[in-house]
Amino acid sequence: QVQVVESGGGLVQAGGSLKFSCAVSGRSFSTYTMGWFRQAPGKEREFVAAISSGGTTFYAGSVKGRSAISRDNAQNTVYLQMNSLKPEDTAVYYCAAALEKYSNPSAYYGRGVYNYWGQGTQVTVSS
Image (cartoon, rainbow, N blue to C red; front, top):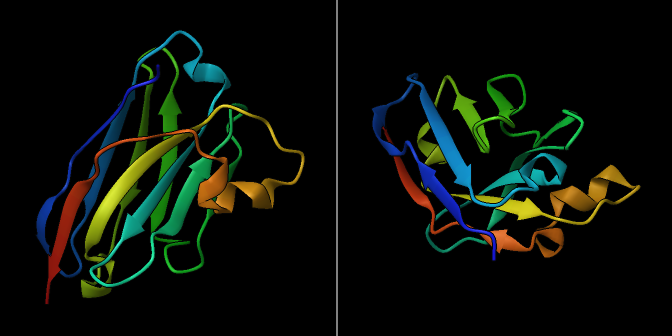
């Protein structure tokens, strides 16, 4: 069983920054593709960013250019730095691990390929 635990959420003013962390248990972390998703009240959970085992990164258009996903395989941790936060970034942010490899990178934009999820961390951006 893989455990995924997020941290780093909070209340921030518009224009501010946050850095999320996601700690993952298990010996095979370096082989996983890791993703971040978010869910705002009344909305579907949506893709934010992902990073493959080889370090290739993927971003949703809504956060591209103001976000950076990274990983530290020695620490079994993935990070998401978000800058220039907007009120519409308010959501619960979830970290997830995909164990399988897919030849089409677009697969990682969907929730279905992720096997393990964290409990989420709340982010509130005030205007």
